[in-house]
Image (cartoon, rainbow, N blue to C red):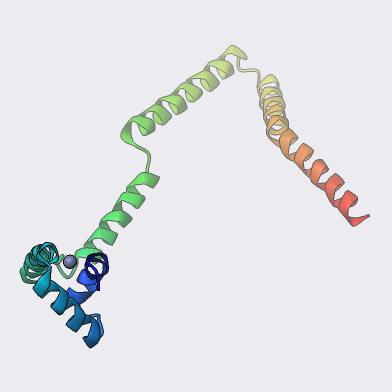
Length: 148
Ligand SMILES: [Zn+2]
């Protein structure tokens, strides 16, 4: 067995994963080859250090605590941050102000007021529904195209 083969198997040697004949051959080589013996000593020190080194284990409830923390973070993410909720509140307040100003500018004329509310809600509805109508028409077209 030459030096390269011995060095390629030295970690298996320390892990007791070699055949007895291989172990015997490596031992015989180590007796006569100083460079491999030096390498072997270094590996032996390393393996001894690793085997006596205390493994730091996490506490038993570590995973449970981490998952709980992740779950809490996810719940908090769904809520509005305070700055955003303040912005939303001020937008709602602005909307209420505009609506009340519009009502007062109509000189308390109830017919004009209802007409205004009706036409603006219709307008709003059309603006929201137009893209959906286009999408539905497109899907109808595609379904018709595929079924023919
Ligand atoms: Zn050697």
